[in-house]
Length: 186
View 1 (tube, rainbow, N blue to C red):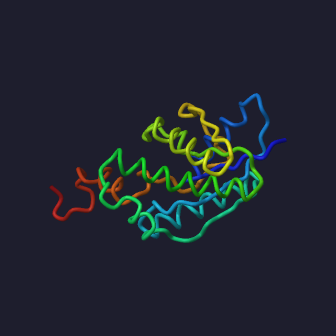
View 2 (cartoon, rainbow, N blue to C red):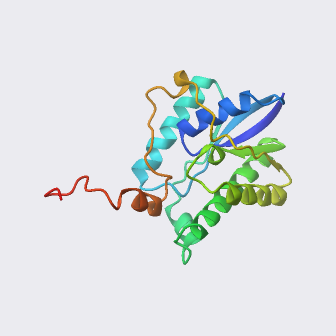
């Protein structure tokens, strides 16, 4: 069975991707990779990493985790390009570049990302960034549109489920129009 490195940004998307991979005609042995310098603040990053570790343990999958909190690296990558979709393109390139390098280092000829399970991400930009990263590292980026995939409930049960993509800009976009936590409430 061929190993595939799976870049994971969160447990729920990882669960969806594993379901999509399981339906593939080619059999893959997933190796989970965590490398997400875009996720902020630090507590959010830790919550997501913990949930990915718990899911990998439940699924009995190997995990390669870059546990370096990447605030400075992410800010440098998007500086001057803070608006979507430019920010997103740079973020995808950063994360998928790291994943492609990790795939090569782990002996995986193929890699993919949980980003392809999201209804909120730009799939054309993800695919372009993944293919460019793969070409740079001599590995193949497996793109599939797994937005409709459903995670195995037992794998994701009771695991942290985030409310925004991860970066501080997306957090702002997600919550800027709410009145939650305002006092007095408007």
